[in-house]
Amino acid sequence: MTRPIPLLIAALTLAIPLSLLAGQVWINPLAPALPNALPILIELRAPRAALALVIGAGLGASGAAMQGYLRNPLADPGLFGVAPSAAFGAVLALALGLGALLPLAALIGAAAAMAALALLAHGASSRHSTALFALAGLMLSSLAGALTSLVISLAPNPFALSEIVTWLMGSLESRSWHDVLLAAPPTALGLVLLLRAGPALDALTLGEETARSLGLDPARLLRRMVLGTGLVVGAGVAAAGIIGFVGLVVPHLVRPFTDQRPSSQLLPSALGGALLLLLADCLCRILPLAGGELRIGIALSLIGAPFFLHLLLRLRSTLA
View 1 (cartoon, rainbow, N blue to C red):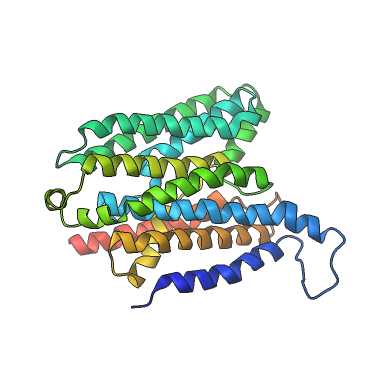
View 2: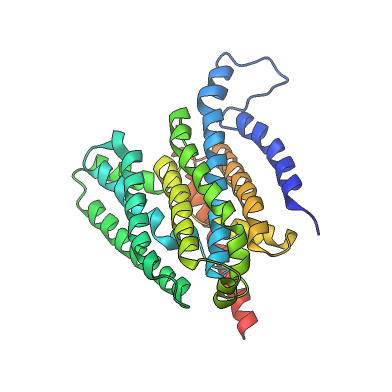
């Protein structure tokens, strides 16, 4: 069995320099430097690449953790309702003309979803806790989506509406080191929580009753999942908007190269998510579009939707 971590690290080692050189204006390290090459690298492309690594790692790991927790290969971080709630907070800030407070509003929206899910954790030790928790996340997603649509319909002017729609598409364009500093600490903390949940997720694959006999505390695991996923998803939405399908696609790509245990998929999924988002951002910068660059949220949806359909068809053939 091939160990994916060295391969992913090697791929990232190649992809990071590519992300710094690629763009509408390519920087050739072997040719005489452009007059503004250094500012482009330091102020534009380096923070963008760093943010792609941070957000991608968080989304990849949270997707693997959630698929292990729910024991469902179709689970995605958006299922918890944290991303839609964070988006609602950000959209509300834009509609009120408080664009400077957008990251804070998104984090508050994510925190509100986390608090709502944490309230459900007290009664989450029943044998149907994972199903109930998934339904609670679906309810929060639907509610946040409805509230977001309401705010969009009540947008005070076309400029605010344009800002809202553009932000919801998800993008790393024009991001700075400030955005990296905003997203990195909560993402790092969330990743630590998710990685520490690995052994408990392994025990859960044996069934909740067996896992409990091995010392698993379902309520504690649930709180760790809520907090870890909320931190990484909320931070990602606050910094770059809605970026979907990373948490769904990446665990499936790395799973064949692991021993199938959830704990062995968390770190490779984090590295794979960072690599996928970095390469997708490079692609968005390179593709020539008349109206500007392709939004990364749209690009990943175009990739993720057919992949999701493939998983559904494969699951149907398995159950047939």
